[in-house]
Image (cartoon, rainbow, N blue to C red; front, side, top):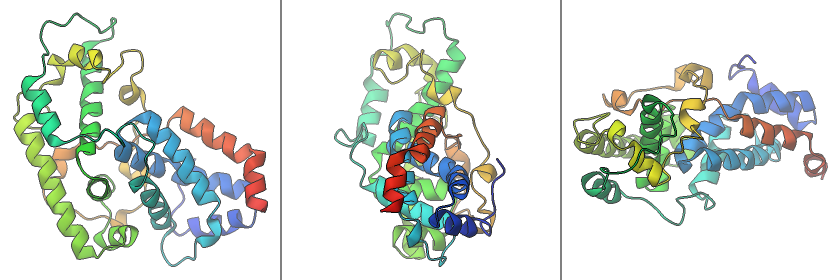
Length: 283
């Protein structure tokens, strides 16, 4: 489906709010990848991102009448998603938060040698890529929820500081300052410890079996390498709302946008077709 421009989306919201099912389905299709990618980076795993995306889109659907046209539809969606995800407590890391100290200890002292081959005949290159994408995404959990959100909005979506500040309820200046500090913290850690994105000793190809043993990756469920990548421009038409805050963007190439998964699409379609949604909309 072709992506609508930001100028066309408000009409879809208005029609959907009036009960136009086709408009509602089109609106959801336009924003589901935004919601999924934000959820994936905020929560760390595909399974949690799938569940949270459904929650967020249901919240959007049932609050269509709150869109006043005072900001872009995508900004409104970001605000709904961010408010939900910052306070989300149902994901894997909610009650077992990570830290850079934990990652540092694991890199320096993890017993990666002498483990039997657990690859189950899956190509080592694919497993190494899966580990690289998984590890760096989960590493975002070392940031507190607000800093993580600022990092994602600025690094992956490259939102203009005015729009990001509006989404987060802070000034553009505060957003720029916090984004710069957070990006530097991530970049410094990657440079010192990661051999994939910096000059550290940690190499994914050497830690495959260690990661499988620790249930960090599963050769039979390769979420990242199986996911369909999309371009940032396809993900979100925000060219006029993009800015580069510093020269660190090349250090965060792991922030790849993905298509929302088949399970996410199925859950959302079931929601759109459900009598429960009709009851909520008509109440």
